[in-house]
Amino acid sequence: MSSRTLPLLFINLGGEMLYILDQRLRAQNIPADKAKKVGWIEEDRRRVMNDIITTMFNKKFLEELFKPQELYSKKALRTVFDRLAHASIMRLNQASMDKLYDLMTMAFKYQVLLCPRPKDILLVSFNHMDAIKDFVKDTPSILSQVDETYQQLIEMYSSLCSGEFQLIRQTLLIFFQDMHIRVSIFLKDKVQNSNGRFVLPTSGPVPHGTQVPGLIRMFSCAGEETNRLQFTNGGNYTAAVREGSFEIFGDRVTKLGTNMYSVSRPVETHMSGTSKNSVNAAPNPLAKEELNLLAKLMGGLEVQKPGNTDSGFRVNLFSTDEEEEEALISRPDELAYGVINIQATKDQQANAELTKIMGEFTESGDQSPSSSKGDDLLAMMDGL
Image (cartoon, rainbow, N blue to C red; front, top):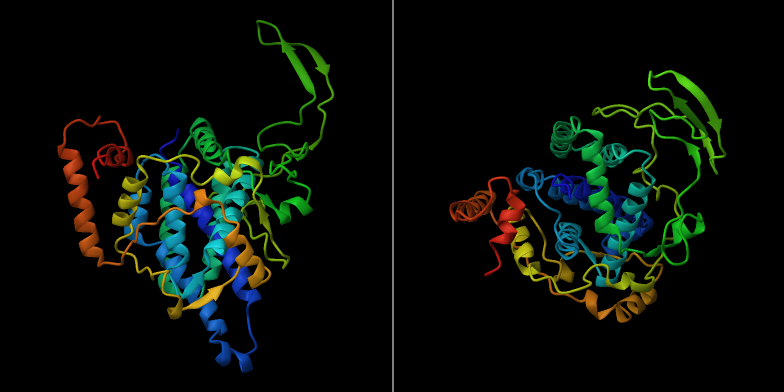
């Protein structure tokens, strides 16, 4: 598995989360004459988006995120986004949070599957980053955080070879392999079957740098072409389009990773078969350790307590409150896991604690010099 996958997974899932929340917050927009009565104004929507993006691109957290390490477990990553979604005055019912995470993961899984080349996963990431940058275009301080992350992405991934990108793609697909949640948008567009599995196209442009399949050329030992055979490729492929830009500014060409909720339409999710176990299929002996590590890493973030429903407004990802309550009642027991509270502390204190912990692990002496810091932390935490 690739030790460089976590930043791409986090940024792309975070981008999908922001798309969904922006769409729902706009859908709940209320005329000014009624805003005072219900406690909701357009300014609240911008505040929610700014707060989440500020938390998501916190410099200290991203420094740890970009260090080579294995992926967190599904449970640990879900906890990160639970906390991220509640980093503002917004509150989500547990059923709505389940639905939000399902939409995020299935959308990015579909994008990874459709990438013509493994390297195009980086273009998908840049599409998400471009949209996030547009969300905060009027807030220079947050914009600078996003720009710094662009530079980190370019520095880490621009020099990777095709084989390393293939390993990243494989790592992502392993992470998503047991998730088969049906999403109404995908079902209506006929890109997903009723069992939750995606339908891959057999038409369209071939990957950049390749040719339309259908021709076999044979060469002699001297390298001279001796014969040609044509065959039916079974699809309706066209020539490759130009390559997208991997710079901070530029045309990404691909639409994968752009906002599919820009056109308002209802989005429903349904569990399919064994996918109910996708978040926590079996007890993870390192789950508590991973969550404690995340608490340390995110210790400096300004995170609101989700349990305090009086301090913010509630967002419903279902069409009605009745649907949300029904989803909460029918929620599988295996999803009802406990979450470790990640309390907001001062950056300096959090960094000191993290440095102390890492120092203890480094001094233990039984870790391989070549292993990633994420591996070291998890391997040494089994006594917590």
